[in-house]
Image (cartoon, rainbow, N blue to C red; front, side):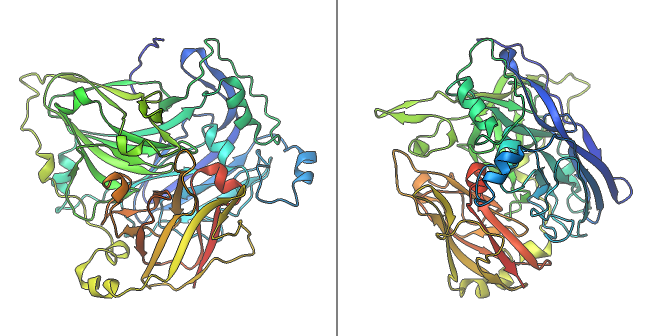
Length: 518
């Protein structure tokens, strides 16, 4: 079924001004008008899908006022689930999480235990440190019990810390022609209207009148880019476009690359993962694709050497055939069935006019900006021996044990502490999924707040597609097929360190834990 293509639009941008950001985010009911006549009511931020993008600077003070204009929760339902905190509930209560930011988790900063009830307002005040890493983070609600339905419905937006342009990195910034956000979110209709409405019903707790309209009876999942279905954009031959990719899907991973016919003329380079530049300081040419779990981000550069139409898309990779919760093919009767492969963006590449012609940027030789000190502890050679002598001090694993969503056999409790950590100390953990193969490997994206971690191993099962040694991450997919070793260094902030599965229904049901940084 054909759908008219529209030019790519960018979400509304809220910029920093003179070291300050002051903005209001209002959560209320809104309507999404999707492709193919699909229309439904949902919960939105500022009546936008996706929410506005923030562009801030290191050292900024950010003041946000979160207003919850949603109607009351179903009190009868809430009273019945009081004894089970790890359940789908309170869909009209909310809060805010800055996913990927190195920031304080206490008080009225990135405190995901704050609860903004319907009709309430909550101020947030973030002090972004002066040496914060530049890069792409994003924000979304994170109230335990209602995170999944609100993110599923479209509540998310980009949160970007701008590059500090210095003499050393000026060539890098001058070599980029456009800097664009691409947030990927889904309208999940596989299984028809009933499957979509079941998620929106949120275990029977929601009183939202969804009023889903699906006149063409679409019964497959649809990916949207900045709220648009396969938008298009113009660029010129040899232009270098920076795309800030955000996987805003509430559950599924995306395997993203160029179509096979586009690869010959459009090169894709990774420059940052999860809001942090590659420690190698050089762009990495991706011959295969980029795997983004739910909540994952990647900054990429795309450059095309010929005019024509080219596609950024989800792509097939045979090493992923037995892995669940991936937007891509499934292995069925030993054959690959690519029923979920979808284009994300069409690049209309045009020849340069004589007056516009310029010397092409050699992307491979661009030097990426330096990492801040709190991250170079994990990459600098002067700490290499100390890190090499680390023992694995903790084993962390997710599991769905007899229907219980658990971390190390425990469901989430605000009263429990998973492990004590010390500030300014190196740690080495083994993380993994304890669930065996069940017609496919269950996926549990591991997300750690505040402090990024260093991957100490390649994922051998997929030849390094899921994660690579030497990359700094804050969200990485875990399967029973591999249990990576990670190192991290709690810096700057004491208090609660949240760790959870970013398959968000799992998090709502208890697959989350709190460590304490002393």
